[in-house]
Image 1 (tube, rainbow, N blue to C red):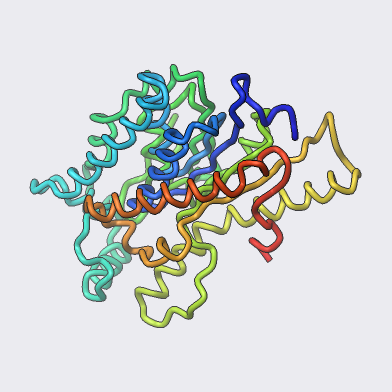
Image 2: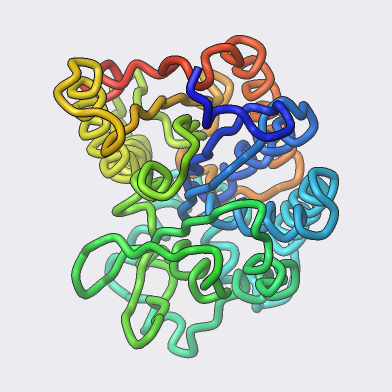
Length: 345
């Protein structure tokens, strides 16, 4: 076992790569909650995009406040606030509705209306003041000074640079509400978020999540991908909503699959002793996903923040994480538990 896979107090260390996906981020909440409660793993670093980035900063704030118990409490409070905001009755909730609130988006007329409006009118026309209740929610629930002060964990938040089309990566010590808003900025719904004069869109386009900062910046060799966008669906989408939903999943998995291909190539070079320490250490890649239970939630349900749906996904995440830890704890620091070549080929 690699020495760096063991923490000073005997716990095994792991990095987490958290995908974005709107309300489906509640699955990741469940995974984090299980890891925190179980106690066998210590999280060294988190890379996140969109909802994954939100989970990461909420985790950091809570951990600074009261360790593992504080992180669990803060995550639960955040997702309850997400649900409450989705059900608020004021007219200001309309932009929030477009990202989270349940309003029958799986149904054809609702999706057709939404697709038509966003195709012919931009957020700059529909919402010229740039109002975004999601910003208000983050401002109420997250103390970014505490996030930046939490030195227990490294955090990397990804966004997409609109000008260059390249990934933009932000570290914990620099994070503000703007960085998280940029990471969650769907361009058909919200105006681009400017950081230092540069517009940014959702991080999922170029890194959902980004794996390279975990490999480049941490001593821990093990990275667990928390997958909420299914890579495979073994049926052919035939209706317009089904086709759009599958395109959504494929698009937001594209960058991840490219990174997995590159990592597998480097692993083969290391295993064949063509490269190796001290310049290259072998990474071990793992994945936890919701399996068939999460596949019952369509891509459109990422906009459903009803409390019963969020807690259902949380419970699926908790169960999946516990099964993974029980099954693969001894593999940490020793071998991959994700077949990388099978994941992208």
